[in-house]
Length: 277
Image (cartoon, rainbow, N blue to C red; front, side, top):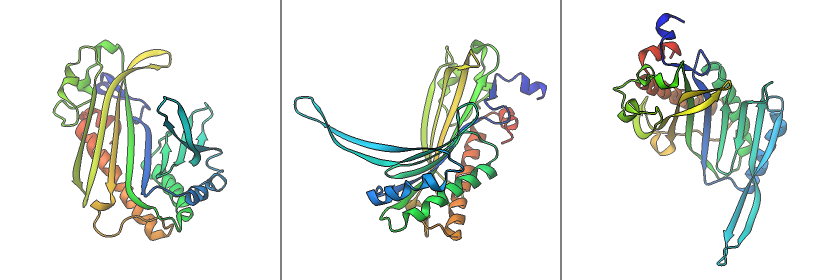
């Protein structure tokens, strides 16, 4: 770390990078029927070497009567949640199937090449269980959660060390906050790499207990999504053949590139260099 890096008010939460979580998700229309949900439950056995922990998830529907009494209408299996835990008892990886989505979550980020390869393996494992389903992939999304921790005294934190003042992606009042607490939420469509991508960016500051010490933390939560109707030509299906896998990889690589572009427009040049963006 050079002298300029040492004097910055904020540091990435993981030292070399700021990524707390990255998630890839597929959404489907219409939602899965009972047979498809049942087929996806077999992922517990198929992926048990990577995800030793598994739990079924349930969807409970109820109604309120005219007298205010709650009555259960249905209680059905909605999907499965698979987890890989670390030695400290935290989650390293997680995979969820729900009534209309499949998602893979990485909470122990290394490199995009390694993480995306594992995500594709997990998604490809689900496709063969969707054969015959009436549902189709309606959109593909990638979510990044980046966190930056204040160095030193919270009251002396300088947001200008972390975020560009001229950025379009955070409201200007954040730089004038008297107590360093603020929240910004913005969304936009952007033409990028032959696609129209929906971006949703939430940035906020809060206090957190970091190793027993109250620290100011800035979190950037970026969702970027590609919708079926915005793609010219064929879209990703639930086929597990190599062509479909290559197409899916190309889509999530594009979403990853969009995330990098947004962060470069959001973060200062010093922080971009610090996290090797």
